[in-house]
Image (spheres, rainbow, N blue to C red):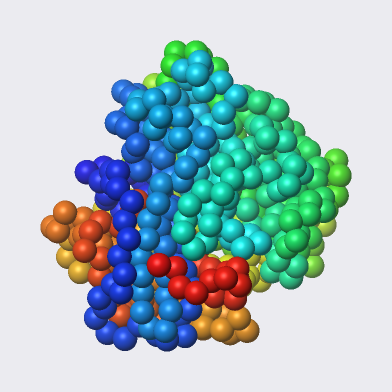
Amino acid sequence: MTDNIAFGATYAPMGAEVDVRDCPAEGVVPEDLDGGFYSVGADLQYPLQPGNIAFDGEGHVRVFRFRKGRVDYRSRFVKTQRYVAQDAARRLLMPMYRNPLQDDPSVAGLSRSTANTHVIHHRGCLLALKEDSLPVALDLETLETIDPAYDFGGQLPRSMPFTAHPKICSHTGNIVAFGSEAQGYGSDAIVLFEIDKQGRKVWDAQIRAPYAGMVHDFAVTEHYIAFFLVPLLFDTERMQHGVVPYSWDGTQKSYLGVLRRSGDGKDVRWIPVPTCGGSHTLGSFDDGGVLYIDREISASNPYVVIANRDGSAYDAQGGTSYLHRIRFDLKRPTATVELEKLYSLIAPLPRQDDRYQTVPYRYGYMGCPSPADPVRWKPVCYARVDHQTRDVVMWQAPPDVSLGEPVFVPKRPDAREGEGYLLGVGWHHNEALRSDLFIFDAERVGEGPLATVHLPVQAAPQIHSWWVGARDYPQRMDGIV
């Protein structure tokens, strides 16, 4: 088994693609849940090379397909160019995370994507994402790979990195995305772009960051784009030594970078803040020229698998992430960045109602440790936080169950914020990681699941998740299996 901070749960490599029809359920599966709950995580095609990290597993996508109160399950490996080449060779050909110097000569020119971090839907396809490469397009029904390097009809260079955390504009439905290290490994260039619902690129710009490093997530509002840059730096020496080419440099400051959305990028401002870490944005919005970003922030390196540049041991307490609100007044040329800790919850993977990604919002959802036993990175509770009242409502999983990142599903397309369901998967440690899907009324999380859907096997590993409603499937859709 592997207990890894990236995935929110303990899991074991699967190596198997699974189909289950009519999963048995306790309770009543709501009949108005119509669509698919998709997730992706890193699964090992072949054992990791010494020194490599679990982030480098192959993407394994799964879906729980809901239809008329019944649930079917399917999982498939993402057939990236890397996966296909290694499958043919029956061995690792790209053996080190984001280090092409270790690649076998036979894979020169192929995409290094593992497509293992996040999934979204776009124009009837599922896009599997990994931040150093273009998306991989999958069939929503079968999960089979359609295009292993999806460039939006030739509008993006084949070498373009594409964030694992694009934002969907709450008003237009456009994808707002970026690519870091856009001019090659170790470059400080960040390219930004916006793609409309028809798949047309409608805007792009390029900026320079204060340093080159791993930029995982960002924030988008109606009028602005912002990056919270942390010193997880590209390390040339580590790359040349054949290991993971990133390290944490606690001597560097962190930065908030802000620019106008749809501009030329020349107005970008980088405001230094005390050194801190963190990876994920919960929500963001602007109001009267004031920018608000809610994200998880740690005091130091948030990744136990990433070395400290000075050789010091990983600081578990300093690496623990809590939800903070970043406030910045763009009207004041000399304004400083304000940070406010919102809750005492450990929350590395917070989620919101995705209809509110770029506008003011009220609720957040997350897996977190039990307050009575806050073992770091071991989510055993689901929580709903209310920014208006600052209330926290929690449900604790049964003993020996750890939880993956949840996703919110609106009850109807026009449902008010928070009116809907919360879905999340649990792994049973005392049942060889056999898994259940928990379904909650999102407004009554503390009352426990409305229904529990049982799998006879372990669910595929998971990092991030996405909901696709029935109306977003291609018209040929008539049940997934």
